[in-house]
Structure formats: structure tokens, C-alpha cells
Length: 149
Image 1: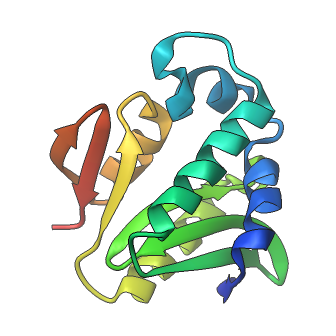
Image 2 (image 1 turned 90 degrees about the vertical axis):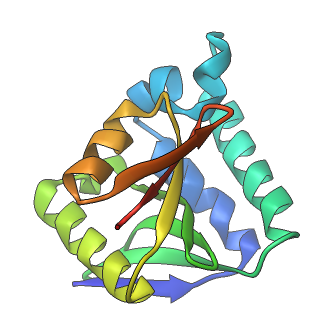
């Protein structure tokens, strides 16, 4: 069973770290920080994600969630209005059945049309989103906007 629990911004950074830890592909290729084609560390990826969320949340109404599977922490989500702004699931829980349960709960949480933002170099996430009926509706500055239209 997937659940979402609202958390404070102070709790978020540890969840980002656990979502990126042991995911060398994300750190080396798929994180937005890699658009500059330079080597970056896990800590730099975590700090970049966290700092972007901090900056963006000052402008927009937001909710920060811990994602739980059978009562165990497995990831995080940050939602700005009708946009799934930032999200990740811990590598050890990225199994098809768990990801499908999570995605169904995401859709139920929004209850209708919603969008998500990802960087265009995050091919792995893009494939997941496209397989789950999200469509690319805009691209600007290496950022894709996808919607469930």
C-alpha cells in the first residue's frame, strides 16, 4: 500500500539523499546538473535539487510529501499546485509493481489533469512518464513539461 505523508522542508533533504544514493546512473547521467557535461558528486546532485525546491517554493503554494510503501519510507514528492515538481523513489523500491502503485496514487491525489517537469537528459524518467500516459506539451531551457492529457 502506498501512502503520502506531508512533511516539512527540513525533512526533505535526507529523503532526496536516500533517493539518489546508490543510483550512479542518476548521479552521472540523468540528474539535471549533468547538462553541463561535467563530473558531479552525489552531494552536489542532492544540494542542487534541494536548493531548487527551496527557491521555487518561495514563489508557489506547495506540499512536500514523504512516500511510504507498507509504512516504510521509499521516496519523496514536491507538488506545486497541479504540478508534480520534484519526485524520486529510493533505488531499492524501483520495482515495476511498486512504481505502478505509486503512480496510481499520484494520479488519484491530483484527481484530474496535472503536469510534471523533468530535465530533457533524464531519459529514464521520461520513458516511465510516457509509458504512463503523460505527453510532452512544452520544452524550454532543457526542461520538459508533461501532462496527462
